[in-house]
Length: 187
Image (cartoon, rainbow, N blue to C red; front, side, top):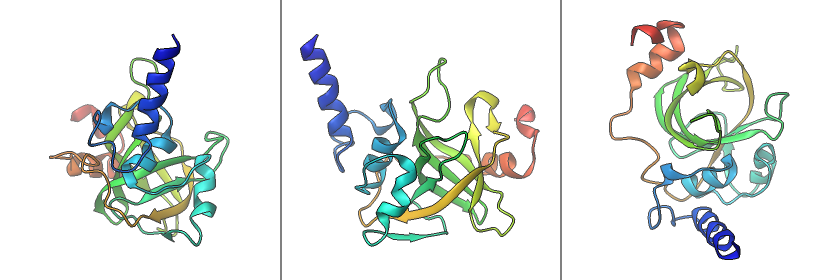
């Protein structure tokens, strides 16, 4: 039992190190919290609860309010996100629609923690500044109805994981998710 726990802890710590995801199991096989996943996928070395990343990045990494591939988006604490959330931008579709790769959002087989690649993120902020977003949610097979507050994007210096985006992400599907509510049933 001790050996099993040690092996699991070692595997989790290796996944959390930059550059080790490619050497070990696929980044997309990850099951766990969003923070170690985002750290591994982006190369941004910040620790602690997701909502603290924005302030921790000040003076260490560039920050802003425009999505870029490889940037970490920081969701603020809210009633629904007690610890916030972090995810990595995998693709910019257009000025108000991007795709994320993240962990611990949707449920798979009734459980959270799994990695998801190229899911739709839609800027619904009145000022078009990415301060409020909707996120694709597996259980509803589309954008959820919740609106989440965002602190902004943290831009890393290292190249993000090669597994961040799929070979053929569904840009059109992401646009439909964002701009044609309820159209999922027809896809």
